[in-house]
Length: 271
Image (cartoon, rainbow, N blue to C red):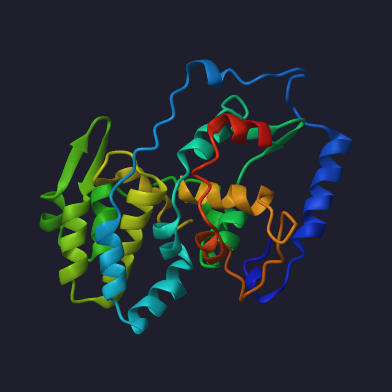
């Protein structure tokens, strides 16, 4: 998919039909009769960070700052309002095959790709040529934070903590920086980093993990659900929409009533 795909209208119905036909014709690498064993031994935790302070900061920003954010990071703020349905998320986990790193629905395997994340976020600035590879000389967590925050080495080093097997920085430090930073662009960058760390790839509650900075300029539990919705959930009696520059998948998902009343067993049957 070309980087300028948002300038065109893609017919997702045609893409889906082609994908299904190709898989049915060529098959896949899944063993015949495979049944997921995750149901027996996996416990899925849907514990989440509190996003109230992130929402309050976003609501306080004027239209100019918000537009600056949208132009750099697409529709990422809508993820703050997408509620993770614990029953749906636990049901989805039963269809995940760790051996193949994909979801398996019946005879088909499915996994989100960077280009789909780009379409969901409406963000064409994600560098797909870098997302599928890792640089030989990767900057340290310290240097990456210095670059993102625009703060001194001393300031950053004093706020890096060790949590388990990885380094991180607390949300409180990032929150205070967002509120006080004199550079609007850096303020926006730190806010985006916080969303990725607290919402998209949370690891230690209340902290942003160093791994997030590896993905920060390339690319989301909530985005996984949005991706799932884009493939399966019925909208106007069809399971897909035509993506165009004016259509926001995340905005549409936020407006859909929650599905909290559907239990895990029912979701599994639906899937």
